[in-house]
Length: 203
Image 1 (cartoon, rainbow, N blue to C red):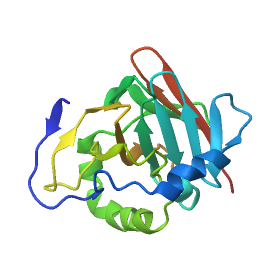
Image 2 (cartoon, one colour):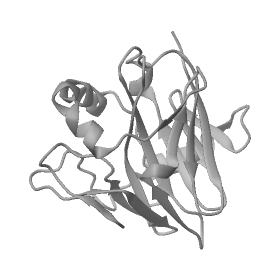
Image 3 (spheres, one colour):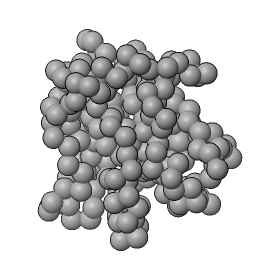
Image 4 (cartoon, one colour):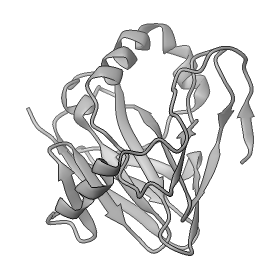
């Protein structure tokens, strides 16, 4: 992992490695196909895409509940299928808005500049979220540290997963004009493939 920024203090996101609910993993068996090939629905606001390099779960309940916000917050969990490895890089993650604009993942500097007004927004996300532990118990889950409160913890600009390691955390996008209803597409470019997960926010 390449170190982006180092800060000291209590972590903003606390995810205990290896604490994966067996019941959630079993829940994957009830996944329902969507109209988008390779993307299944796990819950009302939870989707999963399985590709050759990575399996990515996306939660967007908080986004649905915060239309009009300047920030789009998505929950993400990811791992790799058997025998595979995938590296997620900050500058290769983006979201396409209903208006057709492609918005890159925010930088830590952008997040830090807005952090004081984002705190209530982030606190709401801690409460209104869906479980994202969809992997077998043998997977070790680590935090996805793309963002942190100023002075809180180490932040990275890439993270690697494999068939024994998963990550879980938040993706943050600053949306010009605010988050609007409509169809979005999360895109993650990997070394040999691309993960694309469409999702719709409704009025």
